[in-house]
Image (cartoon, rainbow, N blue to C red; front, side):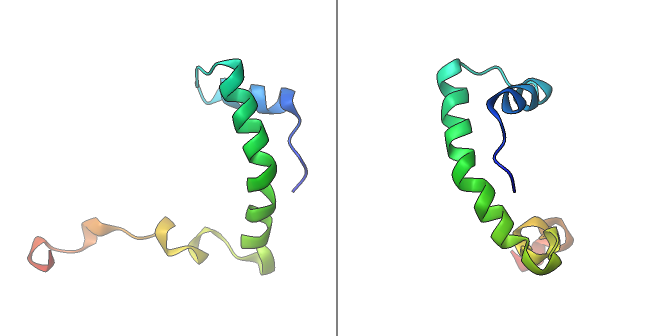
Length: 67
């Protein structure tokens, strides 16, 4: 995954409706440089979102008697 340029990050945050200070945006952009390579490793071998059970677990399918 290529490094996201700062101006692209700004556009993505605006599109998401987030109201952040310049310092917060700097911190997110800096953190993304570490997160992007991790996402690349998780997505190896064509694995999709379903490879992470936390993305597909639905607690509502269990009845209250099991809680």
